[in-house]
Length: 332
Ligand SMILES: [Zn+2]
Image 1: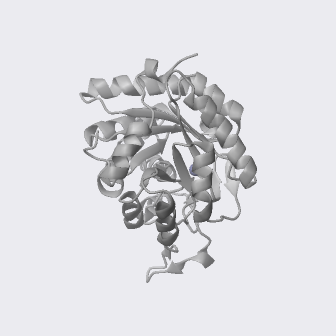
Image 2: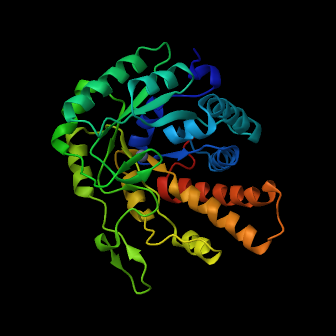
């Protein structure tokens, strides 16, 4: 049994309260290796932003949960060494069973997501409620994120061919019955780097795909139902075209990449949306820089020489997100 407080971590409770009233969203960045963690912490210390470090089921498999948990502990100490203590949350992304959530809660996670969105409504309620009862009865309260509505796209072990939007008429019943601390909703964001099929988009003069806008009408309706309740957006990478072009210039191929425009996320962050998940953009930044080094220096074989520049780029990307997209800069 390890409590997150022993690791120097915090849950999302107070952070979300401040974010909702302050009109900004917390960054939730996925990590599964040291360089990503360093880039996240450097950027968040520099911009004085609180941060949610997210671990997916895929990351647990890849990097080992014990190692990731100790990296989160290291992240807290690293921030301190860099000269500014920022609040750090360690969050399980897309937990798909009670057992996984329990395991994470007992080994130092301060927050978990239980994703029952693929089950029937009643099963989703029952599973989410069970996780909440367990998480909330710990000596140190662990926060729980639930999900209503299904996002399309592929993210590690989570994939769905079709999305369906969150139904605003369900949200009061869901949050009341389950007692979740925050709710992930589906209003048109999507997992992965190709968030929409070309036929769902229009094209600009340069042939670049323009995605359909987010359904702010549904978001507003949800906010009316549960005013001030913390809302979460998954699948919120913007898929910067510069990275896609860089990757393709240096030998990659990422056909029909398209993300969520940053202006729309900025608008969402000003509402009750208080957590925005960004993973694909970090993957693109790392891949672009690694490909560039390999292309320009075919003789390079020291991993530090190609992962280092990727880490620098990641840090720039995260600082930009905190300052210009989420509005979390200066809030720690
Ligand atoms: Zn997600």
